[in-house]
Length: 219
Image 1 (cartoon, helix red, strand yellow):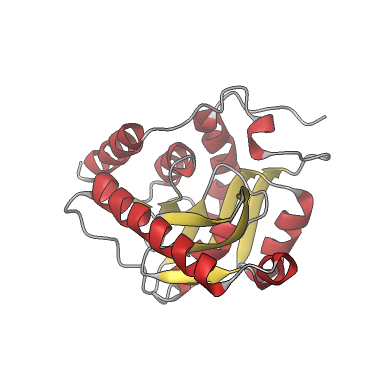
Image 2 (cartoon, helix red, strand yellow):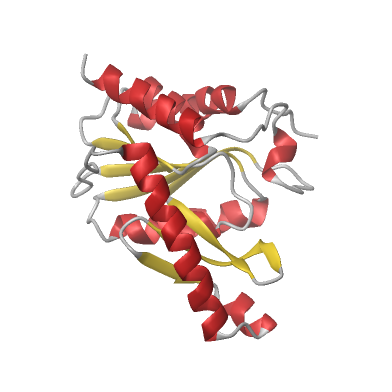
């Protein structure tokens, strides 16, 4: 069985080691962390690569009655990604989808305000963008993040996570410009199984990590 990470910070440092040879100290690099769990990982990656960090808010659209199953996701910039296979197989109505989008969009906007305050988003045009989360299970939120980021014309989109299911990792290797992952354990079960400490990250903790990163960038 693959070894577990102690916590998200350790996972970020280990992930950064894989990224440094190719992306360390580049002037055209931006690290985008997916909250909440991806922010501590992304902080360590940004610090190791000497790159700016920003938050990229993505919200899963839960299936009615089975909220843990994603039928899609929404992301910063108003993008909506729907998993047509899930919607069709479960016969989910357009009305149910619309209601979930309205609910999650309100939460997305609340989080944007809570994490960013009045700080503007980084310009991604022409940049190498590394999207970071604490792991990939189905990949629905990362799909939304990739699609939203592509709208802003980066030169390259890289997906980087400490742990992923093998099929999802293979999928992102084919659709991202590049994909980095430390471990793809089998059986996978869930992202949290591969962390000793996988405690819930609060909004205040996300904001604190971001403010620390942004203060460091001003030095």
